[in-house]
Image (cartoon, rainbow, N blue to C red; front, side, top):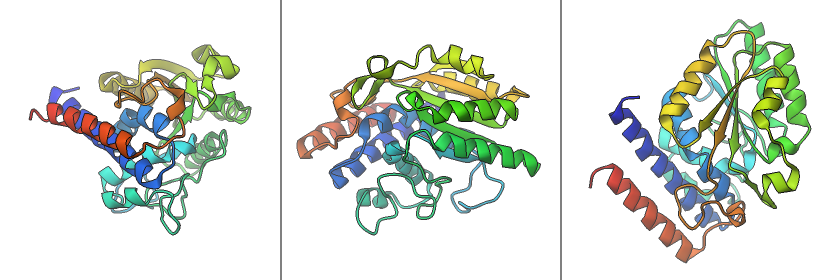
Length: 281
């Protein structure tokens, strides 16, 4: 990846993280930890990988993205707002009555949201169905789904993975945000899904492991995904929960807790300083 493109993505990812903090602070609720761990992924998808058009959010031939771990909606909303699907100011209405930005994604209310999600494990089934329908219709669009490492403790994702292999859904790219923490603590202590790559390979997936905060590795992985034929592709990305806000990093307590006024000020100062460094100011 060219240095200037990488720098722009890093700047945008920082702005996406700022949006997460703005939204959850305004709502006094929400899930910042996993939104921040996936912020680089959201940025890469919406600013490089996905074939979408903010002016035509319902464009029939667009790529599809399903946020299977729907509680990290603040991260998705921030990426969509930064991409131009709706105004940035809307982020401050997160979880408010009448807002189109509810606690979990709603495809009937929010421009750019392709599937209503929230009950963990179900989003990947919808994504697999979208991929199969695209094949039946002869469309070249691709379908992407993001799951949490805690989410794959559910049984339904594995049924969907088996389905994806059976129907040779090579237009489906599954991404697992392996930030190692869930609401109750370390994933391996609650119910270990490890080794994730070996299990997905056993289910017929082509698999690549990456650092989920490295845009060069993302570029390589998504490019590889587009070359695989006859099998679904999975990207296992190792990330840090709360990435980008020092006092939130690697802390399970920030899974579903919003920053108070003091924490908001600290987080925004830190992110603004980081953005200024990236911009060379």
